[in-house]
Image (tube, rainbow, N blue to C red; front, side, top):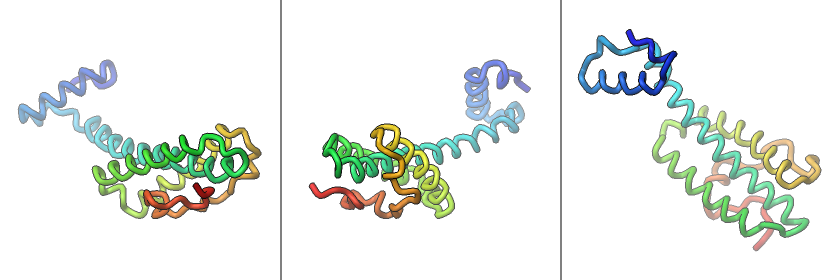
Length: 152
């Protein structure tokens, strides 16, 4: 059994890939390999939550700050459009993430991080931002929906 996992992760990955391609299942580091495969799935979950956070942050900035200053409205709308497109692609490539439990977990994390992002980047009083997520998942993913945003 290779000790490269703890000493040289890159080399370990290359060894494991070679063993798989050669059909040398007896040489596989199954314990670590199983952990890494599980972590790959968790990485996709984190990626979903991060994209939701950016989307939510920009929706909040659009909703809260534009009403006051009309600053960066076009930029935020562009970012919202880009994030929605990226989310749609990510979910198409990983349909298992559409599981309601997975989506709820990602949305909860995305809301917390997105609200924090909007508060930090606008510098506005945190009390101006809703405590609870006003956005439904369908609204967040709908490219035609601009929930609670100022009119163009």
